[in-house]
Image 1 (cartoon, rainbow, N blue to C red):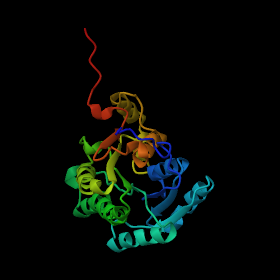
Image 2 (cartoon, rainbow, N blue to C red):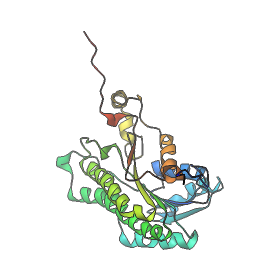
Image 3 (spheres, rainbow, N blue to C red):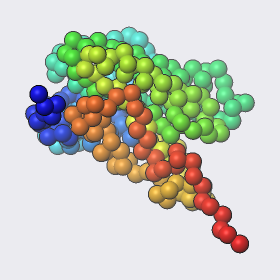
Length: 268
């Protein structure tokens, strides 16, 4: 018998799928959710305050997609416990989870406080795990799921002033591999989408320094920081049937900076 099969739908088509994207009141979360909606998915969008989601909800509904806005605090277990029942009551299913909610505090390592560390690790790492756990319990019953954890180039590289953040993102990379092994038998893939240097609300002040932007761009093989839409293809790929046999992977979308190359010195 041939191992080749004919896909039941176009590889990158998300029509009829329901995607939960956390942290969508602003920033890259909105771009990721927008890309999934344009590929056909209906959306569950979340923020700590439901009211902040109203403008984005209207935008996605204008694309012809169904949208459920929900309040979610990934640092609060009770809030996480309420997520899946609310989604199932409205849509009846969850096919895709994008763990995007995150935070950062930029400080020299000697200035990081106990509370800084807890804020970052509880949001970026513990929150990612327990939201994944809650959603996976539903996906296991359906023998299908796509979980996409949002990491960063700091999953694989260290930067001064980002010690807790790098620790959290390195943890997300390792967590991704463990969950992929845990849940693969149930038809669930778990991957990490790791952006490089993108301008967001968290780091916008850095991009006001043109000297720094020029320095950064010179270190990136493609010679520019990322644009939010540079993530569109990657997130749709990981959410779709095109990545059916891809799991436990960290996909770096970073213009090549993680390759570690630097410009060669000119020969004398």
